[in-house]
Length: 306
Image (tube, rainbow, N blue to C red; front, side, top):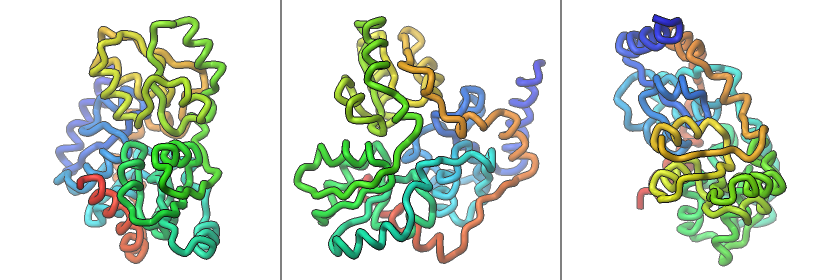
């Protein structure tokens, strides 16, 4: 048995011993997705954090995801597979800016992308993910919407909801903004028959070229249901593992060498095993922070389910 197979076997044993469940995002390595109990995008993982019966969650994702799991399930232990796996976008807005906008637009709803810290969620009215942002913002009674922190997702959402007045922020995902129009066009020249599937965190000039725009899970569903056989994927390359698992007869290509999140790729089988063995680092948040940050997350789950 190889070292990798031994680790997978030991991970399976420890999950039973410690009443643990492994949640993994699509952007982590395929080996980690393989040992996970549930793999999905941010919204799916937030739902699973609430419904899984296990007392311990091993979270294979970046820090804001682990915080969201803890906020929604404070009675559970949430252990990060890697304490240094973080999301730069989550830190691209501060509380002072939220207060400024609230003073300028007293009726504004602060709509917070889940790619944000617990402190920012606690100052927001509702959270959204890339899969439900349009649906949720449309349901809000507020005309003025302060969308944080991602500028590209905010602008894409605004384009679908012209009846709302959006105040944008300047946050961004470095992976998605590193995908350029010229690269997509070059890839299309090489694979002219390919459909272009893009995440709404991409820039508007990339989204204009896309045949389909959607969240990670929506891209996966679209490619799986499509009768087409060749696709250009404009999101983080971790999704390729699940795309190929579900569609062995189809071809998927990236459009540039920068479609890579170094934080997500920090998470390896070794880190999952270490987290199970030591049950650290545990996500810890003050009770008052959990109470405040839970409200916009629960409102998201409620509005998305309606």
